[in-house]
Length: 136
Ligand code: NI
Image (cartoon, rainbow, N blue to C red; front, side, top):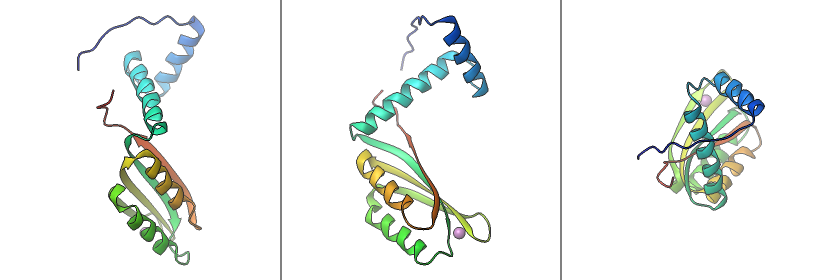
């Protein structure tokens, strides 16, 4: 897609803070940082309007907890049409890390993520959203 240049006016102080932030985030130019901010906002909008979205759910849990693994598997089968792939890693003697790649309706992905995170024994869960960028 062709790039279009446009000018942005900002308060000096705000720009200084922005530059400091993006340098911490290892951006090498403002344009890329601004592009990412815009995409981030558009992904959020896509999410609100229940468009098709892609993402990753990560879960950390203790596999010794009674029936936990079974529950997680049952939920994933219920939402099987949204799941592209999943990977299970054994972090240590007790803890497992599971990463589930998802693609589909934003509302259903949120529901899947909530269901998995709320299973008793899941220590931490995140849903990270991304986009194919076709729409913008
Ligand atoms: Ni494991």
